[in-house]
Image 1: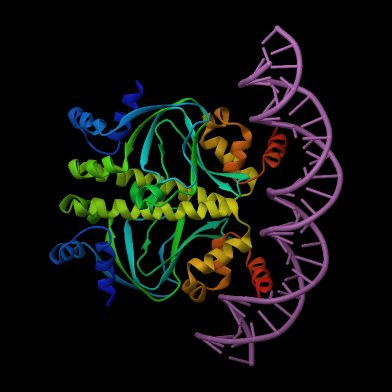
Image 2: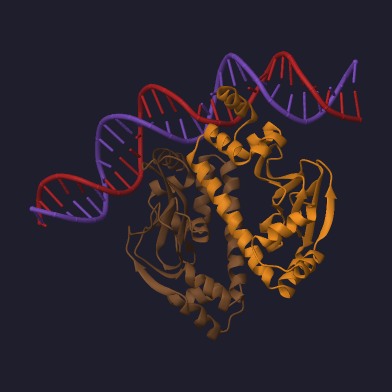
Amino acid sequence: MTAQNLFYENVKKYVDLSESEFTKLSSFYHTKEIQRNEMILSEGEICDFEGYILEGCFKIFYNEDNVKEHILYFAVEDWWVLDIGSFVSGNPSKLNIQALEDSKIIMITKEQKEKLYDEMPKTERLFRLMNQKALESIQLRMISMLNKTADKRYLEFKNKYPTLEQRIPQHQIAAYLGISHEFLSKIRRKLL
Amino acid sequence: MTAQNLFYENVKKYVDLSESEFTKLSSFYHTKEIQRNEMILSEGEICDFEGYILEGCFKIFYNEDNVKEHILYFAVEDWWVLDIGSFVSGNPSKLNIQALEDSKIIMITKEQKEKLYDEMPKTERLFRLMNQKALESIQLRMISMLNKTADKRYLEFKNKYPTLEQRIPQHQIAAYLGISHEFLSKIRRKLL
DNA sequence: CGCGACGTTGATTTGCCTCAACGATTGTGG
DNA sequence: CCACAATCGTTGAGGCAAATCAACGTCGCG
């Protein structure tokens, strides 16, 4: 499967689109290659794009006191990268988005997105469903945060994203789990 | 403003609807009065409804080992009550929803909701936008969880929902913040 | 080679939990 | 209308989970 087809397959899970409709949908997007460590959004900027990942991996994170990073989520193939708050409201973002690998995404600007909704009303449904999925998934994580100690959350993460656990440095996983990297190291030791 | 008007005003924030369109939209919903402490969803059931609160207050919570409650969110006037995961997928819910006050909501069944989308495509947009708002708000809370100690989170909560802080018993606020009620009590003492 | 990114380990401290005991208030059935 | 239970909040003692700080080893890379 080519990278572009990944998008088509994914879209078709949510709405019926003919090939020509998909071609039209695609025309609103443009491809972008991003190098490892490149920032595609920095705190204070307005997020005027929405990206869909064809290849690679990103972290979406919050920077506390310019010292500590807290990772809101990792995004890999078939996920979205944007700060939805900033994208929707047009307010400056508090988040940062950075590539963890050389990556390839397709992007749409806010302006184009509005046009897309106007010209292809079907996409309202597509993005409603995708938002629902995202909402569900972050709710599950919130429950896990309220509920479970760090070792349980780590096991859950490994279980849920076995490939991510390989691709991403441990100290970043710690920043996602909400613990220090030292403590994650100690958890891993115990689990052996 | 009557309770019904609350719904109209809220909907109009997201999409343009004529009065007759709104009447049609309303016809998909039915009003329901719910008494304090009544459960409208229990763990294991399928959430086949979506409710919009006209009056009152609910907690949406997860029950750990049938002992400890973790509150995913509180919902008051102009919020929604449902388990979106169960509602969308049709799988049994892990969540519970209970009224904290005598309440009045309007409800729509899953079946009716599908019909609503079919007959009034504009509502796709309405619910897409509402989901976006919900997504943004839970993301903010997740950052706060990753980021802040309990006393900061408590102040943030008070600040953001000053009225809720009055309406809701402290031990429930503790369950929302992810701390024990004893510890919340100690935090409050310090803050005096 | 030398430096920066990454990971490990130990010592100490701190945030928060658990358990237990105790008022105050509310609710409820007799 | 009282008695009693249930709910709610407070406080203290002790313990555990996780943070912080510091030191050190490894690896990849300019």
